[in-house]
Image (tube, rainbow, N blue to C red; front, side, top):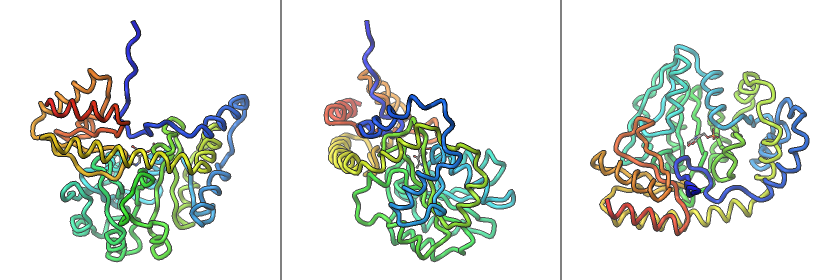
Amino acid sequence: MRSKKIVRLNANENFYGCSSKVLDAIRKKIPEVNFYPDYHPSMLESEIAKRLNLLSSNIVAGAGSVRIIEGLIYSLVNKNEEVLTFDRSFAMYRIITEGQGKVCRIAKQKDYINDINNLLPLVNKKTKLIFIDNPCNPTGTIISHKSIEKLLKSIPSSIFVVLDEAYSEYVTDKSYPDSRKLFENFPNLIILRSFSKMYGLAGMRVGYAAGNEKTILKLKESRIPYPLNYLAIDASIAALEDEKFVSESRKKNDAERTFLYDGLSKTNLRTVASQANFLFVHFDHNMEKENLFASLLTENILVCDLSIFGFDKCLRIGVGDRKINTKIIQCASEI
Ligand SMILES: Cc1ncc(COP(=O)(O)O)c(C=O)c1O
């Protein structure tokens, strides 16, 4: 008997796959994989730069934005300096910082939001790098253009602020920062993006940072040769070109995110309104969380039990299509 395919809603990948143009680009390149890729992925960097109206010297690409995060901490933060982020944020900021023997200070969120007012009092002479994921993983919430501007105005320009916009393409809220515009006035701002989410290329491992030339040069100098594989470079360029795929995925996600949020909000569970492609659900008791996780799994739906990242009593549930979301709501209402 063949077992049913698991619906993976645990890692915030694009539920709808990737663009068919990306698959065509990959197929075209497969017969040439005996060759090394570009020593530096300059073609991709220049395609990204064009879209941001920047120079390729402002862009560094790497094997997933997590590699860029590692490079930022490695090349910008000395041993006696500190990283600052929020308690519920992408766990890798803290894990990588501590892995490099450096200190990561943690500010508290307010109502599941990365509240700048809680972060500012923790800025000190040792602070060198601030990571803000916007939307935040795991809560899906965003902070506004005004909040980021306030932060940038309140701190010395010697502190780098990394705005991690891995899920930016999913955002529909108009208060979302125009980070490119902010960069004009604040050269200590670094914009971080990923091809793993909306572009559907998680398996290809591609991410990038945009920042001032001096900072980007440091990152380029510290990366290994051939940072992106042969297929990933062309796949990412094709992904950038297919704007229709992005806008259609955004539209579908937006409608289904609302449907899932409304449905879950009618149950007893505390669900946080999200701007990403996942929802954060907080439980009063661990047992409730485990029951929902298990009942979804019997329906072949895999979600993320956030205890693996040290967040207790909560699940992160990726947004699926109408059929899947209806099943999730039904399971949640039976808890
Ligand atoms: C906020 C955030 N930043 C960065 C990443 C890393 O993405 P990748 O390394 O696949 O580009 C993730 C992955 O889940 C994420 O949620």
